Image 1 (cartoon, rainbow, N blue to C red):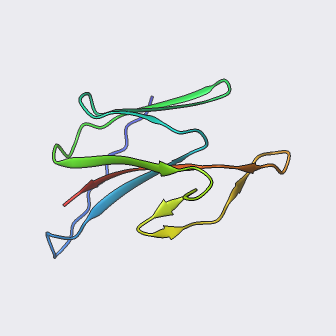
Image 2 (cartoon, rainbow, N blue to C red; image 1 turned 180 degrees about the vertical axis):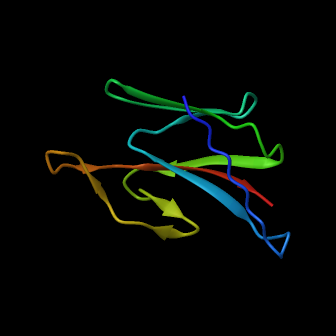
Length: 95
């Protein structure tokens, strides 16, 4: 287990702050408990978001929106055998 603590200081308080996580399989998002989980083969990641309390959580992905962030689709991802992996992007955004 590890903790990510990120402080963002901005001069414009309306600036949208976004934390991004890329996963191979579509994650499940539990907005009530602020938990995101993604499983791939024998691996699993579970993220519990503590702060901020005024956030939105979203996931985009599949063959059309692999690693989409702010309307830009980033480069493709391949596995160790060279096969294309459809990816998902999970974001937490706050104003």
